[in-house]
Image 1 (tube, rainbow, N blue to C red):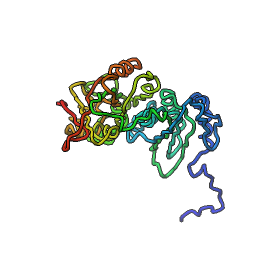
Image 2 (image 1 turned 135 degrees about the vertical axis):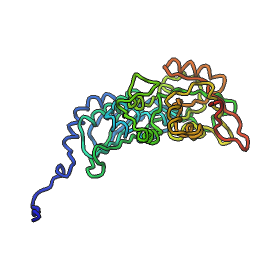
Image 3 (image 1 turned 45 degrees about the vertical axis):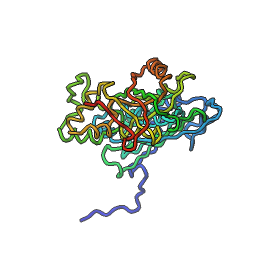
Image 4 (image 1 turned 90 degrees about the horizontal axis):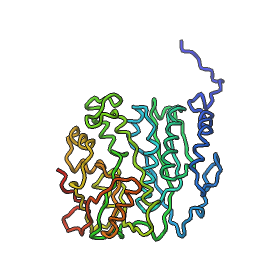
Length: 357
């Protein structure tokens, strides 16, 4: 006989799977670390309904506001499988901060959104702490966020994260496609591995070849297991603008994310121009060659999916190229002249990649 349900029994929010009090405890435990990211423009109203910012305190004369939002894609799935969340928050900040950088600006404020099936205190703290580290690297204030507990929607230990950033740039310093000219040199800045794009393909390879990400290692990297290699954090490049000499004029920046070296660069210059990338100027990381071999990709598909070791492309005239390379060396980024901008002929592509074999 089916047991009758007590219709008069009170069913609380907590019994439905949402524990508001638990997150309040987590937030209070991390308050000191979160507040440590605040800059002079943040009006401290921790725990209020919205963040209050005094843009005059940022020191701009004629600012334009910049905004960006992004996630980390299915790199998050690998982090969950490896139970390694030390860097995923850095990735989240980097994806937004570097997009703002591509317009010549700096990120100043960051917000996060974390949606989980069930709140795991250790996991949430690790994620937020890594976001805090990303904010410190980018000199960005973590001014707010939302953690949503959604039982029944995110199954088992699955969750998702998203980031939102607000930045600024002086009106006369914003980078637009019209600034990039024929004859400009293109400086490549090294990535920290794959960064945060192409992981659905990588996970497909891991499944297809039954790879144990926590115990197996790549032949070309015996220092770390495969998970550690694949979960290296995205570089945050904000020092390029923050510490740039005033007399160094940049024409454009491309952040190499989804779409790789094929789709991203052409967002930074006019349709009448073409970028020539010379692969003989650098050695492609063995990790990307491993992916190419295991997935049986042609070169075009590899370049369209992954950054292939280039996190940013910076466009500059010849007179400023040495100055830029010295600047990048001073802030500890490996960089080199990877190509040039030329006028595009009628049947040419916007990006031409040479000497890759």
